[in-house]
Figure 1 (cartoon, one colour):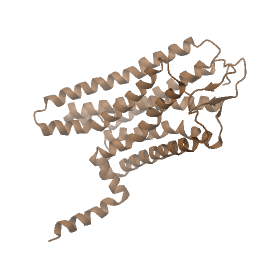
Figure 2: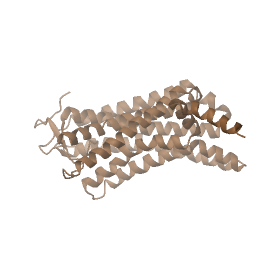
Figure 3: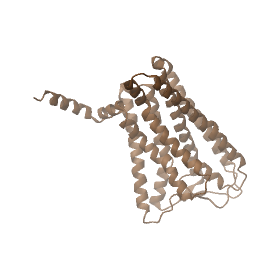
Figure 4: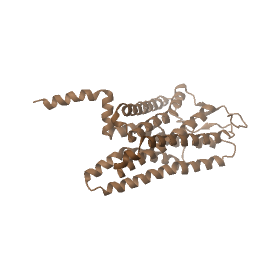
Amino acid sequence: MQPNNDTWISEFFLLGFSEGPDRQPLVFGLFLSMYLITVFGNLLIILAISSDSHLHTPMYFFLANLSFVDICFTSTTVPKMLLNIQTQSKVITYAGCITQMYFFIIFSGLDIYLLAVMAYDRFVAICHPLHYMVIMNPRLCGLLVLVSWIISVLHSFLQTSMVLQLSFCTEVEIPHFFCELNHMIQLACSDIFLNNMMIYFAAVLLGGFPLAGVLYSYSKIVSCIYRISSAQGKHKAFSTCASHLSVVSLFYCTALGVYLSSAAPQSSYTSAVASVMYTVVTPMLNPFIYSLRNRNIKRALMKLSGLEAIKRPVVLLLNNFP
C-alpha cells in the first residue's frame, strides 16, 4: 500500500541522540554492549528452559516466550540505530520506518500481554496450587500466547494502516532513535484526530486492561500469602512471584514514566533517553532478574554450561576429605 501523500516522502531522519562526533563511538559501544547482552542473555534463558525437562512447566513456558519477545523487541530499534551511527547517517526509508513501527507495536504489545498472562499464572499457582496443573494445562497456555499474538498483530496492523493514510509535510525529522508512533503522526500535515483517538483508545483498552489484570492478580496473591500461617510458607509463596513482580514493576514504571511525562514540556533528547529504559534496559535486565532470583534457572544454566558436571565431583571430593 502506498502512502497517501500530497508531497512524496521517501525517507525520514532519525535525530536520535544528537551528540557530537567525538561521543558517537561511546554511544555506539554502549548500545552495542547492551544489545549483545540482551540477545545472549535471553537466548541463554530460552536454551536453559528448552534443554531442562524440569522446566517444561507453564511458568517457564511463558518465560521462554517473554525472552523471545524481548530479543525481537530490542532488535526492531537498536540495530538500525547502530548502523546509522556507524555510517554517520540519520536516514531511514519510508518503508523501513513503517516496518520498524509495525514490529515495534507488535512486540511492545506482546510484552504487556505476556506479563499479564504470567501474573495470572502466578495467581493460579499460589491461590489454587492443588488445581494448578489442571487449570494451566498446555492447551490453555498455548491459547493465551496465541491470543496475545493475534491481538498484538491486529492492533499493529490497524495503527500502521492509519499512519499510511496520512499526508506528510516536508519536515521529516523524527526526534527519536526509532520510528515511534506518536512522533510519526506529529509530522503529518493531514488531520490526525482519528489517529490520536485510536492511540488513546488502544492505551486504555489494550494497555489498561492487562495492567488491571496484573494488579488484580497480585492483590489476590497478597491476600493468599497473608493467610498463610508460617513465615517459611509466606517466603516460599512470595519467592515464586518475586522475579515476575520485579520485571513487571521495571517495565511499567519506565514505560508509564515515558508516556506520562510526554505531556509535560521537555526536550526531545530527554524523551529519547527515557525511552531507552523500557526499550533497551528492561529487556537486558530481565534475564538477570530471573536467573539471579530463580534456583531452577540457575541450575539449568549451570547444566547447560557444563558447570554442573564439574561441581558434583568437587562437592563429593570435599565431603569425603578427612
